[in-house]
Length: 316
Ligand code: ADP
Image 1: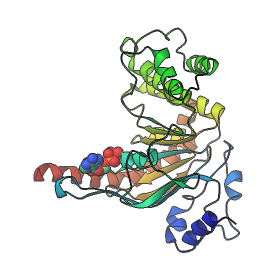
Image 2 (image 1 turned 90 degrees about the vertical axis):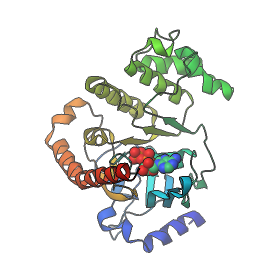
Image 3 (image 1 turned 180 degrees about the horizontal axis):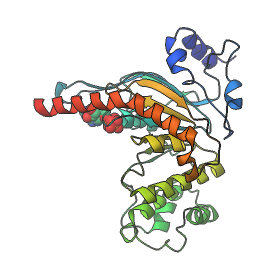
Image 4 (image 1 turned 180 degrees about the vertical axis):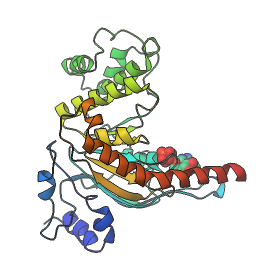
């Protein structure tokens, strides 16, 4: 047993949060098989969800405090989470609960105040192309064409693969728009171009912060289906942040539900809906049940978050 595995297992022996309400939290998964088979492999004889050596991302007792002018805002507190290789995890929580903070700690944009984020067992020491990030507003260079944007990251690493980029443009329906500039495309097409830019860098981990929340409902649904198609094809690990309950369930292997600030994990929902998934899933009984459960979990937290916001506005 490696030193890292021992440490993690020891931690689990001592942690209430890996059992009961957090069951499944440290429950990685390989490949895209659904149902309980892959998960059972990772459970000990006592039925506990154990941390495994193959968790790609390990977040241990993460705390992040912002301290602008002594304001001391605890955004995330005592957060433990493992994300398995090739797993699709969504993080669902009310506005201001620390979702972006969590993601930015994994991306390496923010340093934890306490705790640690490990990727492949190594502490995150800053941004890295192996962890690609997509935000709600795209980060395309407006003065570059879609093709030039897609090539930019690989060019920086002397690793341009034209066939790969062409394939990504095909997969996202952007063939023929290589020479267009971002402002010439619709919002949905810009987010598809953003996805091409991300995937052209060949990241192991895709960190997506509400990437579709600015899109209309129909475009959003199509983008979700497209993302799942690509993910099924490419075997990547995804952490996807959203405050949209249906989106969180439709996409995920596991939905991590967060509390209002300070953001902690309230519960984790294993979504045992088969794959590949398309929009027909949205009207299934199982989907409705998951949706009710997630909505119940999030309801009180959304109220608390709203009260916090009102209080802050009054104090300002
Ligand atoms: P979410 O993504 O869930 O909306 P965030 O992670 O963006 O939440 O923010 C969590 C809390 O931390 C919020 O109250 C927010 O106002 C606060 N916050 C975020 N970034 C900063 C910052 N740079 N300085 C001070 N407070 C911040």
